[in-house]
Amino acid sequence: MIRTDEEIQALEEKAKDIRVTIIEMLVAAGSGHTAGPLGMADIFTTLYFDVLKHDPKNPTWDERDRVVLSNGHIVPVQYAALAHAGYFPIEECLTLRKFGSRLQGHPERLKLPGLETTSGPLGSGLSQASGMAYAFRMDGKKNHVYCMMSDGEQQEGNIWEAVLFAGKNRLSNITAIMDRNNIQINGDTEDVMPLEPLADKYRAFNWHVLEMNGHDIPAIISAIEEAKTIVEKPVLIIAHTIPGKGVPEIEGDYRWHGAPPGKGPTDKVPADKQKEVFLNDIRTMGGKIPNEYA
Amino acid sequence: MLNPNAKLSPDVFDTAIDSKPTRDGFGHGVVEAGKADESVVVLCADLKESTRADWFEKEFPKRYIEVGVAEQNMATLAAGFAAAGKVPFIASYAAFSPGRNYEQIRTTIALNEQKVIVCGMHAGVSVGPDGATHQMLEDIGLMRMLPNMAVIVPSDAEEARKAVVAAAKASHPTYIRFGRSGVPTYTTPETPFEIGKALTLWESTKPTVALLATGSMAHNALVAARALDADGIGSIVLSVPSVKPLDNEAVVAAAKKCGKVITIEEHQVAGGFGSAIAECLSESFPVPVKRLGIQDEFGQSGEPNELIEHYGLSASYIAHVAREF
Image (cartoon, rainbow over all chains, first blue to last red; front, top):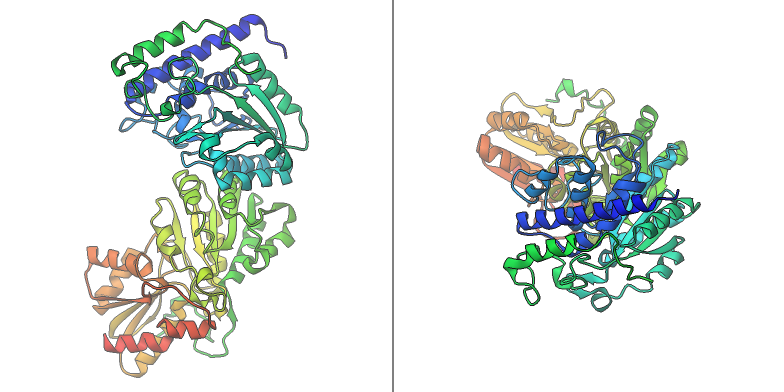
């Protein structure tokens, strides 16, 4: 389905709102991850405001698509997307990581409507997505399962057990989207424990692999739509993203993996100016997000 | 004397009593559960024959899911199946599940409250010749620490069948522990079983020692009680398949009647069943407690009976400890 320029522009504006919420909630929390959530904002926006079959007013709707967040630490982007989509009040985002909050530091399914799994320990999302996909197929159900993964967690053995299983069982009702931002806590993925050639590895395990620019909303829509046309194989979309996208001062800097604005590296922006500078960066990004990935 | 309400087999003290491994109870029970509820599925990690998962596969080939040698995947897949409305049983050896996949069970099943039934086979030293790597002795401790998780250690194949059927109907995730070697089938279909309930097998008129046993140690305790009775020592034998939730009332009642308690388990004494009983009694009715089990060491190769004897779990050793206590 073709989207109009206005529809694309509205999604880009929504992604900006979601980035702003991410910054605000992380500052309020005083801890949490900045790089990953900002880097995945365009993809989560596209999911919750375009491609996903879901109903914020009926989070347990039987026919909904399932979004399994495997790398639970980027959950601020999912919380922000769920709130903006209407699952819960946007103000509640400011309770992130606080005592008594439904927005736990890592997502807990039973705490908050809209979450499908409990995650944080890496490497277990693709298996859960595979279990769901297999069960839906057994029952002749059409629900599509989206598994959001990081690149760093590809170092977990559990992931490859799931890759084998989904490949063997031709679980074409799974679309896994990998946040290929090239960073992990201890540095660049290719220094810490090289992952490449990722696409070839998945193909060797009987997966269909697509690649996309994770900041180009029309490209995201078209990759996800293409993925759904693939039969007899699960699909991996490698989303090339920039960690910290939207804040040039932190883009691509692995030191921002686990730091919130106000407590991150100060060589470019002093701590007390980080919130203000980051929010200003995001608000002045302009509607169209530049296309870095060719 | 034997508790008539336990409706035990008339052959209970016959050395020629029918003997079956508790894993057979899994095989029968899961087929029964599968017939009663079509959402029951079984996942197995390349051990379908020895876990008896193949009995389910023969009945319901489309509901049997082979995962290969991948226990971490098995646990997390099962969480996904449960999320999509299935009632998954996962079957492997306890050394690998929950031994290897403990974090996956903790996060995606227990914390996530997905009703998955984790079936750990080949637990205890009675695995025999395979040796220490395969003789899981820490699983009761690991699993009873998890919130939301029930822990059941059936004492024979018949009780195992009932435990499997009950777990399929329960509202929570459950760990069930099974053994490899044959043990006397001393209970009957009429013997009561309920998650959270202990069962008095034996009660003398003037009991002075309570033998609290879990799993197949219950029958050994019963044989010990009869030997003690012949020596004029009265006892109570409480079979406690439900380690969690624990039947605190029955445990305290036995302690009150006897004044001292011996616990018996085929598991490390640290953290397992004996610890659970000691925790309960020290808070509610402190009495002297002796814990029989594996004393902070690993198992080894040998024949099951030899190993049960070596690690101080035989009926005669239990009786000996009771006499000296």
